Image (cartoon, rainbow, N blue to C red; front, top):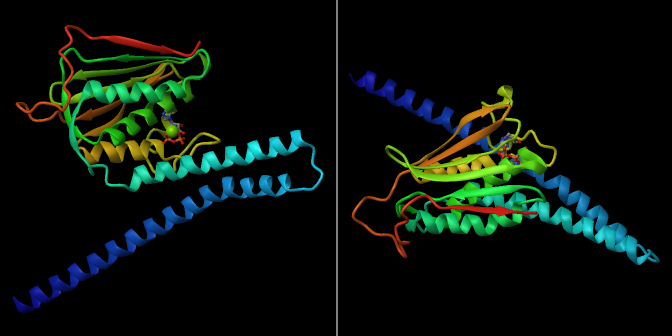
Length: 262
Ligand SMILES: Nc1ncnc2c1ncn2[C@@H]1O[C@H](COP(=O)(O)OP(=O)(O)O)[C@@H](O)[C@H]1O
Ligand SMILES: [Mg+2]
């Protein structure tokens, strides 16, 4: 009995050590990838800024170099912001949040993502629904999905964000008319740092999934084919009986708002 306890204790210790090694290895891998991701725009910005300092450079050329420096710094900022979303505890600052208010903040920021010819439609649920959550984190997750959908679909993008009450959860769907996610990479798109785009960071879907899970929800690729993809973010609704802060009036039927960048 004693020796059994001792040996199971030793086995526990070994398991714990193995888990620790695994965590450290994963952390090392993440740090190495992040360092690599940061280094590219950082070295480019440094190079452009150094070139811009040259004596006697024509003003137009200096401006061009400075514009490029700023563009690289924006890339860096985007990367770091994505990392913060990913690591921050997405539940911090949870509050009662009306779905209408969430969609409104998404709508405000999404306007800036639209390129000429692209169209985004937001469909509201019929009833006033409420979540427990952090508005910035959830809006950030939805914006990641929208930005991917617009990226993938190009100039003729028709992207829809639909919110409706599902059998159990609130269901938020982002659908696009892009070429779909290639079968070969479907398994990996939610992995941190996995990207198939030249200027991608691979953080968007990983961060969005972390936010979904931190809210007790899920993010999945519901459908994908040559005529488009649909990502589904499902989130538990707030317990009934409690009302939202600034709950919007009940809407008789779904409202449809479209933003277009002509
Ligand atoms: N709506 C979409 N249509 C097609 N492919 C997509 C879509 N959303 C995501 N992907 C694929 O998933 C990959 C990972 O996405 P993400 O994590 O946001 O990183 P990033 O956008 O930086 O590449 C993308 O590079 C792309 O290949
Ligand atoms: Mg992305």
